[in-house]
Image (tube, rainbow, N blue to C red):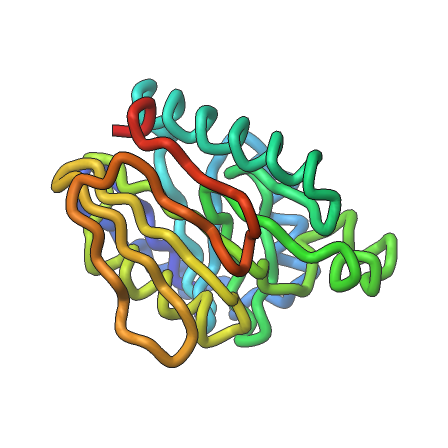
Amino acid sequence: MTTLLIQTESTPLTVELPAIAQMTNDQFYEFCLANRDLRIERTASGEVIIMPPAFSDTGNRNFNIAVKLGGWAEQDGTGLGFDSSSGFTLPNGATRSPDAAWIKLERWNALTEAQKASFAPICPDFVIELRSSSDLLTTLQNKMQEYLDNGASLGWLIDRTNRQVYIYRPNQEPEILADPESVSGDPTLPGFVLQMTKIW
């Protein structure tokens, strides 16, 4: 049985669909193609999560993050940046769409063209999740740990509500920055610095 988890303004809503067995990767891909206007993720256990569109102010902050990361990635040249509409199939089977991501070029180029054209079977090296007013902090914290468990080298969880940034690195407790003016990606992303003025 497939479980649909529909994210409402503040609380996820779970819908049971007993007629549908757990979707294969191909079926999930077709499901997403048939519902292009929805923001869809899938957990490692097969739950399908349908989320509302980002609120306008969150969308603006996501855009600012993507612009900064994209500019750095273009100049650095060692990897590719991805925005919040990109889905990745993690080694544990979950399909996730971080608000921003970066993947080393050699890892990306090791994928086939067909894999790149789907929900690529790869965990980004670097991910950013931006908490909006509709996001539960614990849900995002669990998602950040999932990225690390599946191969991410660095993750930032930006909590606008409390003006904190959680820095995630493998085999370490998250580092919490209180109201930072900027956040540095060194050494994973050498020279990448995100100024927080337009993100708060």
